[in-house]
Length: 472
Image 1 (cartoon, rainbow, N blue to C red):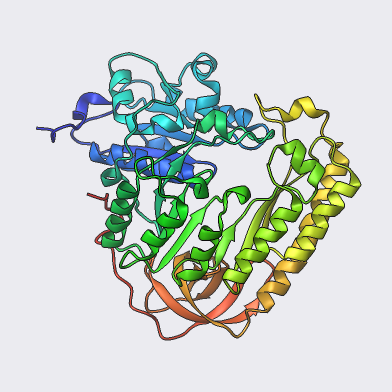
Image 2 (image 1 turned 120 degrees about the vertical axis):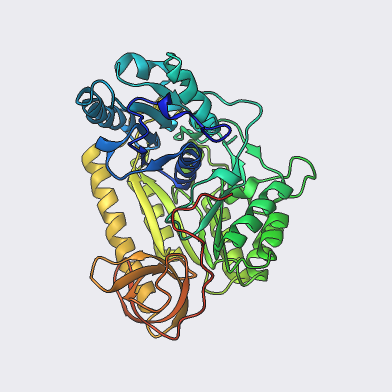
């Protein structure tokens, strides 16, 4: 007999008592998408459907998509074309279900079913908690489109599959109410919705009990979080999470510059376990471009915020997002961006050429900068940043740091990790060689994008019960 609430073994194409069921999930995009994939994997594992790395042996194939960059829709349909070949090649008893999930799913909706006859269902990011119901409806013969933003949503923290993870991710706020002219997120992720402090802290404690040493708070505008019941703000949440016993390292992403308050800045300096690293997207160093982007702050106010943050927390590493070639961007505008990068010395920069997104206002502002000019600007920016990154990394040579182990290195006998300031470190295998453990290293050499280190006396690290366990 099947466990209560589970799909019967005959409920999916290809199921039989002799062959275990498998799912394959491909994830594109941000940490929010990563966590959504963990949520979907957990729901499937509750039904006895286990992960596989090979889509050709999967009974369910899910493509969890991202729509932030240009041509995202085309890339998604190209990949769906590959998956439909798997389905055509397995006619009959082993035919898999294929689901399009994530932001592109929300964007294209029913059009995806018309374009890909082999596609079984479309599942938007606000509906990932309904995956089991969607599969049940498809089993009954319905090709399902589950998109939009329901009034009630469950995060189901007890059924998130966090296998192979070195950090515990916690969604604190979904969606975005900003009106940035280049951004499609409000369309694909919907309006802002905050979880309660009580619910968030319960999940943080749950993750600590499970053995996670690093907690990462997630949201499109994470520092705009407000408790819907008490009105407490992100400063209150930071303090509460930082004071939770067992939280060795606390991070959060993504922060919106104009949503920082003096109390939030102060908390970053108040608690040692808040990571001395902050991702703070600026997008441009030019006031005229920022105004056309609808960002709601000036370059001067961004400079001032950075000064406040660095005064509050010595050694704070900053990363940022930058867009080049935005409609109307002049050489003077681009020069202002270069000047900002030189002055603020970001630890890393995620830079992109502007790409128009459907439904956004930016295309109405004029034509983007000619591609050869945008290409040149991007390469100039990246070259400048690479030199700065190498210099900043060289300043860390000789330092001893506690590193969170994140995986195995490409070279035999090596591992990778993250410093408190979020630099990538490569080092020989140490005694605490378990993913998610902590060890101390001495930085020996700086590269442009990472550090080389030697392990010191390892720190003890709590262990999770099983690398493939589902939280329960």
